[in-house]
Amino acid sequence: MSNISPEKIKSLREKTGAGIMDCKNALVENNGEVENAIDWLRKKGIAKANKKASRIAAEGLIGISSNNKSCFMIEVNSETDFVSKNKDFQEFIESLLEIGLQKKCNLEELFSSKFNNDYSVKDALNNIIAKIGENIVIRRLIHLDIETDKNQVGIYIHNKATENLGKIGCVVLGNHIENNENISGLLKKIAMHISASKPIALNQGQLKDELIERERSIFLEQLINSGKPKEIIDKIVDGKINKFISEITLLNQNWILDPSKRVSEVIADFNNEFKCSFKILDYKLFVLGEGIETDIKDFKNEVASQISDSK
Image (cartoon, rainbow, N blue to C red; front, side):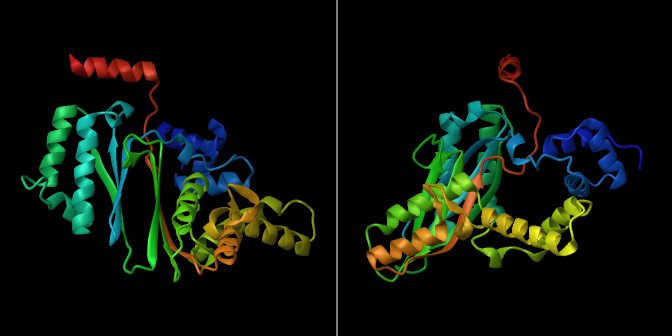
């Protein structure tokens, strides 16, 4: 396939940091499949890293609300950051938090729910779009059930717009047999750690085998022409895999407040100190715009487009 569109080349460049011709060659070699092209570039040592997350430009807010039964988190996106500071936009999300916490609904059910006991959420969304003048998307939501009084949640919101709204939201669900006033503080710190370190799983057991094998094949390809004996290459790859797992699983990550300890060790130390049996059951993390690719505007052009739309 030699007819590769400029858009695909641009997308691959943004994700990998590789040059134009390298990206084009990678796409040609992989029949235009972007994800396969990323692996191809990494195996060749050309891709610096998958830079997808750092190129995200979607705006809006993440909201979190909770009671003694459950915790609810939602992401609502807008076109520009101006909207996240808009009072109507913020109040719209606050109303969604109330509905979501009460109904424990999925996204489809949320749209058909009553908004302020009047019209539907879908109609309310259309109204706020018309009022603000930007496209607004209710993108995703999650619920965490607290279930028993032995379960407890910790919440962290980064870059707050209000008490319940911000740019990054994290909820951690913990379990303990003994009540201890220090558990809430530990849960908050763990939520802050997750927001900064962004693990993709709680532990190794939650990782998909395909993910590990994909990384292993990339590491092997990188070392295949090193001239080292096979047994040495296998040991190096095993070491790289262990490091990879420790970087992406919460309990194996280095504790952000003391990198000499792993998160699992911090929890063990806490339990020893306070004679507790605290453990993490689950966590959810929303990073605003994560996984959305958009055109990046500079501030001057963004303001110009706002002025143009207001005429």
